[in-house]
Length: 443
Image 1 (tube, rainbow, N blue to C red):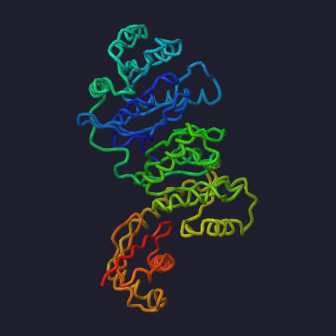
Image 2: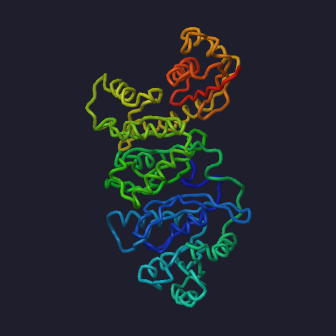
Image 3: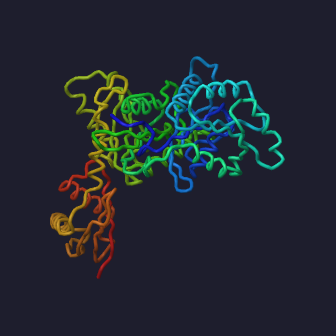
């Protein structure tokens, strides 16, 4: 692997740091123009580093959202969150320290400010929750942090965020145009909670860019990480564990699940991580179904392979198990890995690249017509007349989409469209890729 995790095309990096519940994620969403970071009144919602590209007056840069820092914590998730924030500061070109106008400087703010004063990075001190002009009277007390003039903003209402971005543009280095999502294959790593998704991402990248913890549901945001593998760019999207709807509260966990589904929608390839010690369960099939419905390429990865008792037939048995339980995605490649030991992890991006290329494949109209007409000869549509099908053509990729023009659309039902898709798959591959068949009427 090569390349800096989370950055693209050498764009400057701006890290947003601060103690819990001061509005870092809301400011992140405001700057990036997205709602990718989970925002909730519960302190400590953001735990990992979350990267997103932003642009202001023609300048592009990467913003990093971090978990709330608690400098005194030495163990547990709080210590890991602090380590993630410190890592973000280390790799950043500039740092935004967010404090809360409503509380004034706290002991934790003082500790974080002391840490930042030891850093050579340029710092912008932001007093958040200045929602009205009269609130500005509370801002000067933050001069005591020793980080210069505090900039009053309201992330909630967008007040003075433009002034903040003007300041950021002044202190970050000039860079060539590029982007975290430009030219990269977007790979969403999805699955039930605690199956090893973050461990897999960390093993692929080669460093702990996302928190790995044995508490189910540790990852709540969808985390983007950019890596280069064999000369090709990939954006890894580590997502919150998807749970059955009945077990998801209408709160942080609910919105995390929704963002995980959004990650599937914006991915090119979905890597479904399954716990090999339990096998595929109903929720795994549901997730694969989401990927199929979204038209995304799929790779099924059985993790924790090191814990499975094996003989010469075990791998083949797991492949059959996947094809049986994921009948609508039986075309998906199946892998057995161990994120803990690293077994076969190095092959995951290679397989993801292969299915992406399959999804991007274009077949000439003459070849499509030849294949579809031959399939109709072998098995005519309902009614027994091959003349129901006039001609066919590929009209799209990712997923491969074919239009079949017919005289009677009712003769080409869902089962027959699936038959045509399977015939095209047999001739042209499309491993791991949904194939769409659209029927149009022509006289």
